[in-house]
Every structure is written in structure tokens, then in C-alpha cells.
Image (cartoon, rainbow, N blue to C red; front, side, top):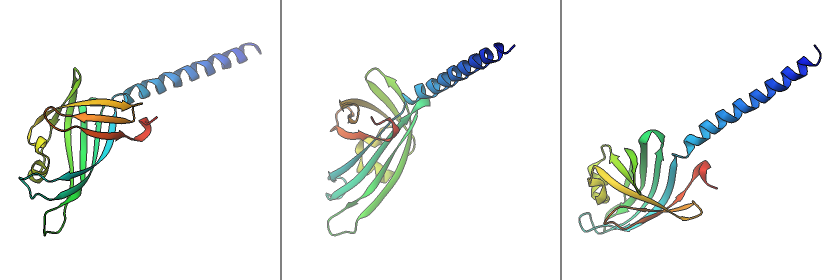
Length: 157
């Protein structure tokens, strides 16, 4: 009887450790679907706005379940005017198709569409390519200038 108790204890501990390992692996495996990055954009405004200067913080988050959002926060200045502040969140759905991610945008403000012409489309094809050890990425959309962003958060190595 005394030998059975340590055996039961050892089997119970082994089972508990295995169970915890399986749970941790299951939850960690879902993190592979998460992609978050940030960039700082300094742009010369297009002719269709005011031909001024701008500075924006851009944050992109794509996570499991095909959901995501991006945040654009900053300001732009037209000649002889006060700075105009922009603080927008745009939600979207996404799915991987070959080497591109199909982004299906939810409603966004007309002001944001004026500032970033690519946002006039409801569906955008986005290619995400790593540049160095998975920390810096090139985001590109067909027929537009690419953008470089830095991966952030707990997934950063």
C-alpha cells in the first residue's frame, strides 16, 4: 500500500504536467495567427487635399478568426492653416490568399479616404514580407508605394 501512493502521485503529477503542456501548446499555437506592427509616416499631401505636410502613427493588428483593425493617429497641416488632427480606427476582416492577405474594410470616414487614397477600395490585397529576423516588415499593396513597419508586442523576438 505504501508503494502504491508514490506511484499514484507520480502518475498524477506526470498527467498534470502533460495536461498543462497540451493546454499551453494549444493556446500558443493560436498566437501564430497574430500579426501586429507599427510605423511612423511622414507624407507630403497629395494635390487632392491641400499640398501640405503630415505626420501619422500607423498601427496594424491582424488576429485569428479573420478579424483585424488599424489605427491612424496624427495630424496634417495645410499651408497657412492650423494642424488638423486625425484619430481613426478602421476595422476589417482578412484572409490569406496565396502570398497576399485579402483585407475587407469596414466603414471609414471620408476624411481618411481623402488622406489615404487606397482606403477608397472596400477590398485591398496586402502583401507582408519580413525584412530582418521577423521584426521589420515590408507592407505592400499593388500599384502603391510600400511601407515599412516594425513588429511589436509579445511576439517580438
